[in-house]
Length: 162
Image (cartoon, rainbow, N blue to C red; front, side, top):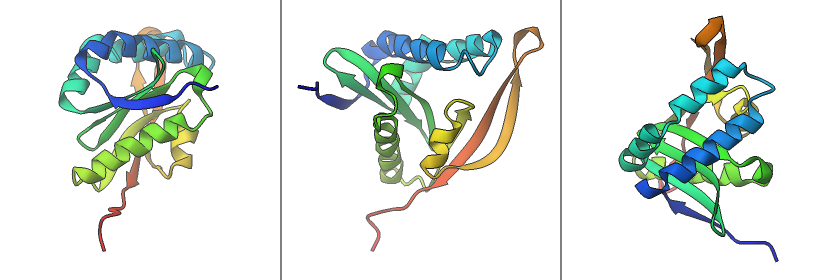
């Protein structure tokens, strides 16, 4: 029997497990697209302090299977961020489940347009969810390397309106 996958709200004590989940996903999924300097930048950006801050200030979701953390995503204001699903659990609709949870929370808070920064890896995923590209951007990282990503938005529908 397959283990049940549960979605819950993150708490500050989850930060270390979330960081491991994020780092594992970055190490596995980004190495063939980004230079090591960009991977290091991603991992530094998703540090424990930023994760804890987002848990305290935003709406941070965790997907668990048994004791394992297998996915996460955060809504901070109108910004969706740190959406990751462990590689072994990708392509099972879990990222979509996380995004729908964040979008529902955004609508509940009165947000009408949700924005995010999409890595080259995640860009096709967000496009399938209806996110539109606003701009392509570059962050210079160490050793003359660059981190390329997309700024994206999606207009949310209020399903409670008549």
